[in-house]
Image (cartoon, rainbow, N blue to C red; front, top):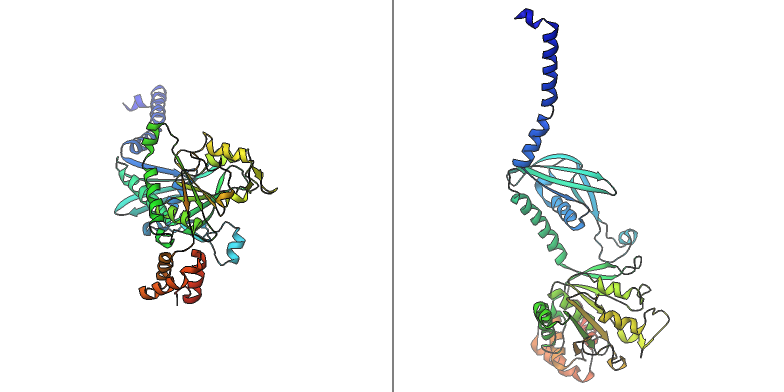
Length: 398
């Protein structure tokens, strides 16, 4: 046997067989890993091309104790200011950005809610450079990973829904909208109108949003328009903000005098209103006198504006609010049926409004009635009455 093994021909055959076996076995580790990934390991990947999901996951990792126990981080700054302005302006206003920390690039072994999880974060380079985060654990079901991501989404959505986003046309990319500021949502009760007026308008909007199928059955575009008119300071803008807050909507404000609003861009703007938003055009009487532009800054023609309001590109489910201090100056074509469905007059304060405004500042029913009776004949606007009450009671804060 030894002599046989010492034969050059046999040795050559054995070496060839060993080489062939090694060549075949070189793929086994990769095949085993691939098999494990497919049948034993579940993986979820999110990359920065999906801005909402990626940001939600990063913010959630910053708040999660298990994900803050690594020793290598990636930081991402998030501005705290509510106005659309530069970082330098934020800093001058004392609104420094906050840094969100999340596990840095590379592989991290984590123990999350009683489960062994490993996370890989890496840069992907293609036509664009983007970040990718993948989470993996043992088990064929991806439900745990889906639940983890859903909790991150809900945390981000909760933060967003606590604020009111206000959008304006992007001055750098005409036809797009950009978020101009964030504001606190305000309850409808904070706007003191004639009894039942605000509640009736809220109920009308709720019926509209619930009636999509009915509009489709009737072949009517699923859109609604409101004209709010009355003297200055009667709460027209505040009412739109409060309605958006109650319905968890955003507000898109459009000035027809904006340099980006032209006959060419108005169609794109109306078609691109972000979902779940109210479109607000304030003081519409200030932009056109009869059918002519009120001043040279208005680049939009009256006919172009009407065509955009009627255009098929206008989003289904859109709600338009126009406000004016002088309804009598509006061209009838602008507020005809089909463009404006409801006209709501917001007037000067009656005695009941004065009483309810007083109670917002001071909980004394007898004093409220006396205040209302004393000033009812002065026909204040809600803004004037509020200014008087602010003078008397201040904000009520220490």
